Length: 633
Ligand SMILES: *[C@@H]1O[C@H](CO)[C@@H](O)[C@H](O)[C@H]1NC(C)=O
Ligand SMILES: *[C@@H]1O[C@H](CO)[C@@H](O)[C@H](O)[C@H]1NC(C)=O
Ligand SMILES: *[C@@H]1O[C@H](CO)[C@@H](O)[C@H](O)[C@H]1NC(C)=O
Ligand SMILES: *[C@@H]1O[C@H](CO)[C@@H](O)[C@H](O)[C@H]1NC(C)=O
Ligand SMILES: *[C@@H]1O[C@H](CO)[C@@H](O)[C@H](O)[C@H]1NC(C)=O
Ligand SMILES: [Zn+2]
Ligand SMILES: [Zn+2]
Image (tube, rainbow, N blue to C red; front, side):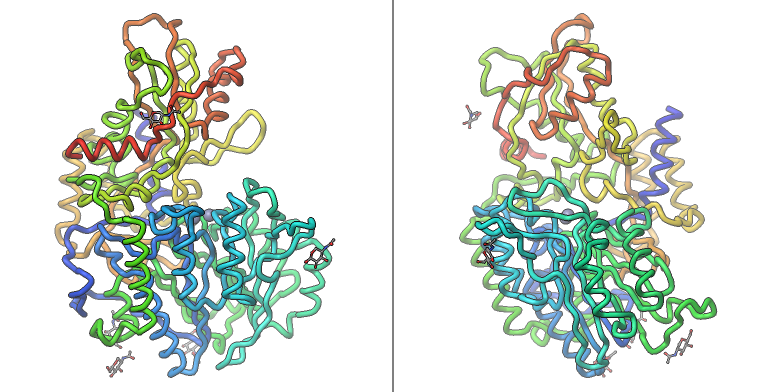
């Protein structure tokens, strides 16, 4: 128990600074009746150079249908951009709209077509981006990369920047995806910008694409030549559109930072990151900050820079007078507020309305609203503890995984098996309301095969704990230590470790301690309701970043973020059977190497590499569909 406490508390320190968000059942805001209400929104601050930033949209262009606090769709976002552009023109300051990549895998709108993205990318490109780059999800399948070039690069042309990712032509030549850099000046303030696009050192890209690690590229001659061509005195700001986290402990970012500072000792440098699906803002030095704008169309990031008030390395100046960041909720209310418009009619632009129609048509065509069943409660990935009745992994291991059947064997194996899933095989919380074809794509669309390996019970029972060792902490990459943190959902793989001020949260931590002491979830729920009784805000993100905790435009009621393990299991094993008796261990083929690693680590010396057999192709998402169809979940 002591260990357990330590595990939860220590993680709590790093996780509490992550996004803490929530679905609200307590807003009754529906699209049509959205009005300017009394909700207090923090205002955005305008500077000389201003940015709207999105990242990791993963196809969520229809908005969050079961979560009213993110009710805006891509059409609303397009209207929002138009108003913000108008305001920037009125103020005679500059605005750049930026995206950091990952546009499919996450939602029916993108994933219900073959290839995925066929219908969603034409929606995405209707937003007029000034700079954008590629994410790893555009590179798993060659078809997706081709599509990225055909639809996105061809549309945005020069605005698409990728410095370290290339595509192979039929004759073998590699060409950049978009261009390798962009040098341009802004229309109002004539700010000279040198922009690059970097993807983290991703290695699971499709044959026919090439990712050169950032740290290698920046030492190549052609790259150095660009820096020579645009020396410090010709560059006011370097913009790095990155598909990588902007946390302090991301090595590529730190090295890139030091490298660029050698060449540009005093220029402003600005990162726009992504990939780890969190809201974050970091200060690397007095003229270099990074902004990361969440995931799944929950957030539009806002950043402004006051270039006149240049404080460079002047400790008397407060960075907050120069930089201002806001995480705007992807909601109609937020958009109306920042656009300073009070009615939907005045807000929605013709192109925004046209895109909404396009989304509706695609949804109809793909039958995304077809109802499979109904869900009675919200089930969370990590806002309640793993074994809480409202935890989705708890629902899976106790109720849904046991329904898995083998395709191969007729005989009943249910009494002697363990089913293991990695927690990353669930992508999003399951919200109450109709469970549709779209929900299926949102929760768990991965069409992996189940495989089976038979091992003695004494090993089988310990595989999960082995895989969970080290939990959320990144293991090193040496040979005998597998990085099992890749089994986690993205937003938990790279938590934010930086300067967390625990004192700010002392009250929460105290109530948290009481929860742990009481060991009952009933009390946990009670404390939650008490601690939020005086807080009338809707539940949502309360982000802590290098500028503090006032970055979210909407004041939300935060909930705890609980640690979740790399894998969870459903154990259907006879407690009285012999330790040496055979147990079938069943898992997605995707995690085969992790499981075999664990069995070896546990001391079982039989080579199992060739003993892994097909078990079923009835993947997790189908089991979930069937369960919800037949049961009240
Ligand atoms: C936001 O700006 C408006 C208009 O200037 C002002 O009335 C309002 O008080 C501001 N809100 C906050 C929270 O500062
Ligand atoms: C390959 O094709 C491209 C485009 O058609 C051309 O520019 C390039 O020179 C070719 N490379 C080789 C090695 O033939
Ligand atoms: C520059 O920043 C200081 C605070 O550091 C502030 O008082 C001043 O008004 C700013 N000047 C301009 C021109 O924005
Ligand atoms: C918002 O719009 C009103 C007019 O509708 C205008 O009077 C006011 O100055 C605007 N506020 C801001 C902060 O631009
Ligand atoms: C496995 O079983 C499912 C239904 O239980 C069926 O849809 C699928 O076609 C079967 N696959 C194979 C390879 O037998
Ligand atoms: Zn992503
Ligand atoms: Zn990514």
